[in-house]
Amino acid sequence: MAKLLHSTPRLHSIHRHSLHFLSTFSLSSSAPSPSSIVSSTSTYHFLSPNSSLSLSISRPQSFALFLSPISRRNFSVSAFDSDSNSSSTQVDSKPKLEEKGEDSGNGAPKTEEFPTGEFEFKEFGLWKNFVVKCRMLIAFPWQRVKKGSVLTMKLRGQISDQLKSRFSQGLSLPQICENFIKAAYDPRISGVYLHIEPLNCGWGKVEEIRRHILDFRKSGKFVVGYLPVCGEKEYYLACACEEVYAPPSAYFRLYGLSVQASFLGGIFEKVGIEPQIERIGKYKSAGDQLARKSISEENRDMLTTLLDNIYGNWLDKISAAKGKSKDEVEKFVNEGVYQIQSLKEEGWITNINYDDEVISMLKERLGIQKGKKLPMVDYRRYSGVKKWTLGLSDGKERIAVIRASGSISRVRSPLSSPMSGIVAEQLIEKIRSVKESKRYKAVIIRIDSPGGDALASDLMWREIRLLAAEKPVIASMVDVAASGGYYMAMGTGTIVAENLTLTGSIGVVTGKFNLGKLYEKIGFNKEIISRGKFAELTEAEQRPFRPEEAELFAKSAQHAYAQFRDKAASSRSMPVDKMEENAQGRVWTGGDAASRGLVDAIGGMNRAVAIAKQKANIPQEQPVNTVQTW
Image (cartoon, one colour):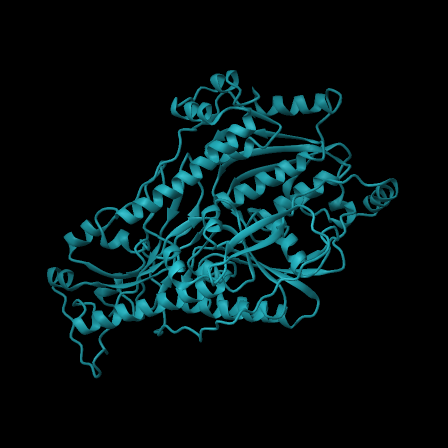
């Protein structure tokens, strides 16, 4: 049986100063034989970012094998549509526009202006304040908040880009951001108190939260951060707060970022397993972890660039927030400071206090008498407060939001949970429903995916492209939108990414394991009777490819890559040879991708909404109703 090399890397946060790609290679089986440990009855191509990467300082890269039967499939790609299906409509109202220049298909510069979507806090008038107070009086009991309350949120662990119900566990990025907006206008909220602990998310989500903290401060209310355990990501968020406190025993590990990549080629060689990997794109390092014993120069170059971009951005933002030079911040990191007293003396934190002491200070600031508790409302309860209650009108015009998070598959596995990844057939149903509805003026597709099944990615691309022919469609990238995730974004009219979103990875990887030597060592034998020249291509794992089989396998992968690259070139109005320079399986940060024409604008959800309004000919000052599709 052939071996299925299926990489589904997930982007993790820098936890204790690390940027970590967790690569999970799924080697599936359908027969109870010794080969079931690393075998499969199907082979197809995968669009995934470079999963051999592990940028980490706190722990080694995780590697896991999952056994999950998969039916036999042949890879195919739908017909290539080279027509441009999206158009932009300018509006008269264009506050705060930013120019975006890129090459058109003929090499001439093309400039388009996009609204920034920057948050502007506007005080309510007397009448609207009166209406808001009346609405608060008739709100349900669980939506009421005591006057003078402090909104408390504990930011730690995983943060999902999906909306969550009242009874769901974990944090939701959309609800965190909405809570900041509501709290800015809520007359019952005096300020925000954030507990920031180790985060398990990417830099895209961190940047979005940081932006909303800064936006909240425009209301004039205080925002205080508390850091019991702190790495680079946590400090990056905390520096957006007005004040930062830490207990005397806090764990501060601001030592910088490092890169590591692990390789299993030597282990497989010793046990008699030969990975036969076909990768198209010199930077497409998915599979290197299995086949190589050391890092390639291309992979090293790509990792170094990514690390430099992330670290450079961190230094820039911290220096700006703390009023210090970039050299001073870098010197602080290189000194390896861990003593909390030193952090206070040098101005990296406001003061050293325990949580109860910070609460006492807040009580004093708000004029609360001793013996009385500080009125607080937590994240979960405040998420239930309706925007309507606070006079934050959604508007009549509707913009649909389709959220696509996780690895990509064509159909849902019987054992998978409802929220596990992007299932193409389900997402296509949503896309078609939105396309047929006349209620929506525009569509935003939020993508947070490292890729996955190539066929599924192509089918979704086609449906998104058809949708874009009917109404404006904007792609909004979160932590990662690479390979299959970028494939989806290509079908939209405009792509928006965070500065540190990981995207691109336009490449293909596929392969199998040759277990011949392993079988010989353990005394296992397998005989195959076949008809057809290539009948054993996906079945004979007890031997390497024959020359004609290897040639067919390589041609198939090259064909899949050419389809991906050519569609990317057409979608971005870029010559194929220029797209080839940006492809080759290379992962880019959002900022670099924008400079190369792979992304149109840098920003988060607010900017995506502003661009959607522009494309749909909706005035920027007019509020819209963003409807989440389920």
